[in-house]
View 1: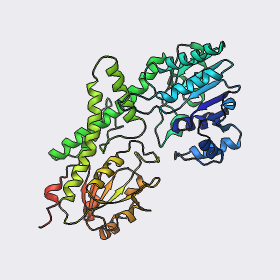
View 2: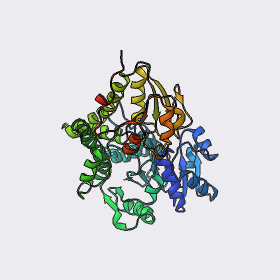
View 3: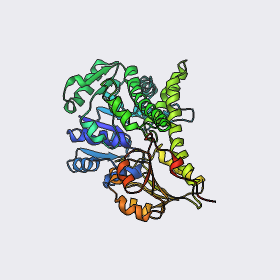
View 4: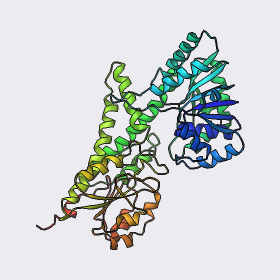
Length: 443
């Protein structure tokens, strides 16, 4: 089939590459001509395991093409995916400006029967809204073109999105057209182990299922983070608490890691958007509101520990920051907890040296390795659970640091190993308190 994908962000690029890999003639379109030119030259700005190779292979096979020419994008295409951003507005609602622009563009230019698939994460009712916008443009043209709209939310985890697309646990297809649903189901059949993994819904249920899934994951994270705060205060160990919970099959082990809160392009904005839509629908979403509050407070929890330590020092604190991206295997800084924490530490006047394997921050000192960042530091603050941090030579670091203190915001490191090496270790919910472990510096 001939497929056009509007948008070359995370979702659009992965969708384009994976569909091309199945042999479909796939054309990825974006209005940013410079970005398209870079992609044509195989300059891929997004770090996603396996994505680069997939794009290069399918460019070579002539299955995947990139364009910023609209007439080319919509020429003789049958399935059109909309995979453009829906960022948060100040009030928490999703910004549908890009969706609206694409819908009107499609309505102005389609000339043959097609299926339009909304892949972007959108509020309930948006797919029907897209249908109406396209029809409005066709009416203005005085044209009659048969088309159908489908909601097909993505469930891709950054850092493993290629794998997730090619090995989905479920595919949700929402449409009021049985024929359109059947067409998109056929598109996904090669990716699933069983046809039962493909769920055929109405559009509203498909849209709400996506938001509900992300909000539930955010809720699990915030719940565990709240329990971690209690664990610190009563001397419990969150790792043991997690083990006791995870063995209950009704709960499971996923998303039970305490840390500094969730970030990225999905959970923060989707939780806010769902809460906004609930308010708009006439009720107060108390649980969703609390999830957001707990997520913010978890960053403050770590900051408070670091501040207590810094207050014991007779000099300006030098702190090594390990990890900037919101999660490993990505270079995505959108809503990363590290950004807020770094700004808070910077406001105190702390000297910061940052390290992340994939990204740097402008106007900050960025090191080329974790060891370089920690040399002469008073403390290490770990904010992204990159595996390489656990592999560092901490015996060497213990000799090179001014104080042997680690704040593990992701509970990645071995408390026991670090303690044996002379470090004072502070995790999230692991029971350690700053006082009296660190006595104030003598006056």
